[in-house]
Length: 274
Image 1: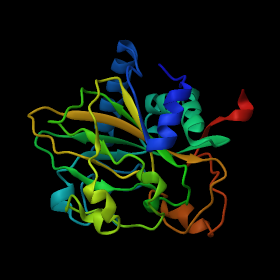
Image 2: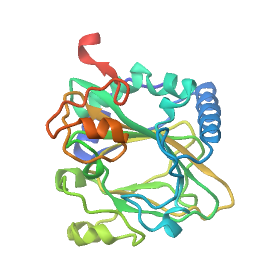
Image 3: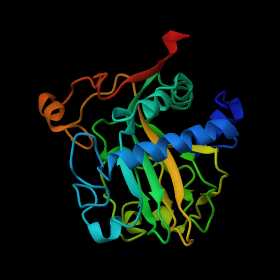
Image 4: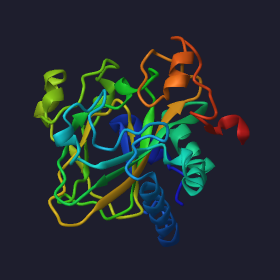
C-alpha cells in the first residue's frame, strides 16, 4: 500500500479538495480487497445497513426517487460491521494516517464505509456534496474511494470541481436525478469544467466532503466496483441529523454530544499513537 503522501500531494489536496493516488494497492492487495468486498456484499443480501431491512436502491430520507436511484449503484453501508475481513481492511491504521494528514486533524474516525458498485448501464450519480448529509459539521471531513476495477469515462468515473470545497456550505442541498440540480445553489460551478478521475484498479482518490463531485453513467456491459470510506475528524459533535446512525444510538444523542462511540465510529488513527 502506498500510504505515505508527499508534500506536493498534500498541497494539491488542500488546494483542489481532492487527490488521486495512483498505484495505491499492489496486485495482491487489490485481489484481497476485491474478494473481501464481493463476499461482504453478497452476504448482506442487498440490505443497505447492518441494522435495517432497507434494501440498496429503495427510497430513503435522502434518495426518494427509487426508480432512478435503484439503478445508480449497489450501495451497501458499514460492511465493516458485518464482515470481519472488511473490518480488518477498514481499520488499517495506514488509511487513518492518510486521512488524518490530508484533513490536518489530530485523529480520524470512520463515519461509514460503503460499496459503490455501478452495474451495467447504470445511471449517473448527480453532482452533490457529502458532509451536509452527515450527523456532524466539519469542513475537513473526507472520503477515500478505492477503484476495484479500471475506472473510465465510459463506465462511471468520478468528476471533481477543483477548489469547490472552499466555497460550498454545510447546508444540505439534496441530491436528485437531475444531474446539475445543485448548481442552482452554486451557479458559478455550472460554468466550470470538472476534473475526471480516470484511474486504474488499485488506485484511489480522496475528496473533501464539501468538494462538488459526481459520477457518470456506466455505458458498458461490465461492472464498475469501488469501495469507499467516509472519515470524521476526531472530536466532532452531533448536529441532530440521523443519516446512518441506528435508531437506538440516534435517540440517545443530544445536539452537541461528542461522537466517540467505538462501536459506531471507531478511531482508527491518532497522531499521539506515533
